[in-house]
Image 1 (tube, rainbow, N blue to C red):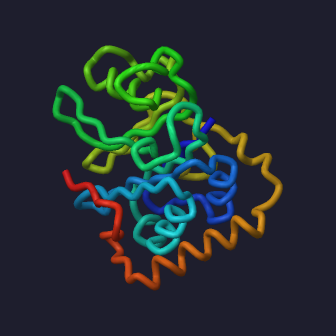
Image 2 (cartoon, rainbow, N blue to C red; image 1 turned 90 degrees about the vertical axis):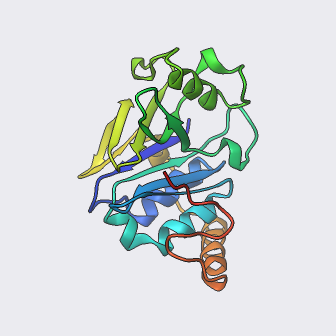
Length: 206
């Protein structure tokens, strides 16, 4: 199913909410956020790493527009290449990052093993309309920091929208998950990760 989250400046889901989203969609997580000058992206197939990055940069991210995605794999391996959000470029020159929730049934076969990537590729080329709802739900953040839902926005709290709330059925943040999250935070801190330059995952610059 996956879940997309968008947050306007000054708003973020609380850490427990993010953990519940992650626990129920455990196959990769990513965030794209804009600091007022440029966009920053962190993606990792291990959700704990992305949650740790968000935690380590909480104040900066909370002050910024942000797009977050937690993946539940349906098509394609659990790997960085299939972890949302994905970069896009439109014919009018707009660039940014986009995330998908659902299954794009018409694009389960294509140049990529991910139906999401195939649908986004077709959209970039003007071959499909992601706002139709036929291929699932999509939200994006432009290289200038504009958040836009193409389809599927559902308000969660003030300034925060999601693609669905089925993850709310999870009843607890389990101890193994909590330990994995804390271990990732400890590892980030031990290795001196810079606020804007997470080691090991390239930071995308427009």
